[in-house]
Length: 223
Image 1 (tube, helix red, strand yellow):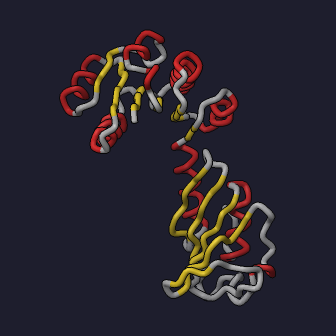
Image 2 (image 1 turned 90 degrees about the vertical axis):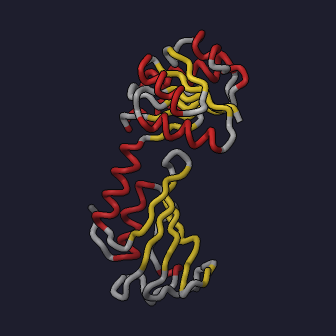
């Protein structure tokens, strides 16, 4: 796989480049800082191109015509969006991934054709909000650009869902208990499946419905 990383002085670029090289990917980094570019070239086996990742010539020099993925990770949303658009439209890069620093810009990136746009701010904020409200949550993973959340929920003995069947729970249509882990056994639930204390539930839901679904299962108040 041929990957182009467009980044600034973030150590994230270094760690990703190192990881991708270890996977035997062909990695090219575009960076406009001469000092940091030199450090990257010395510390990794990635090819480093000095320049602006929104510059057509620099993208061509980085091998955009042959690239499978372009990953834009600068601290400027505008630069990340432009780099992805040029890569896709000018060079036909099949997959573009962009960091969105301002979570309000995330829908715009998707609308303008970026394959995957992710906001670290939104993901971390969501995780903190849920952990602060529901101690029973042990894992939270966003999927489909944050449009779906997969949550691992443990039911304590006082949870209102304990003793009820799934069909008795007032979960919204966009919330689904996809799996139950009970005493190290995996149960594919049906509507008649009755929940027990210490069950681990794999909950799939849309972000807007998650707090309500967790309140139904755990009895905690919404943040």
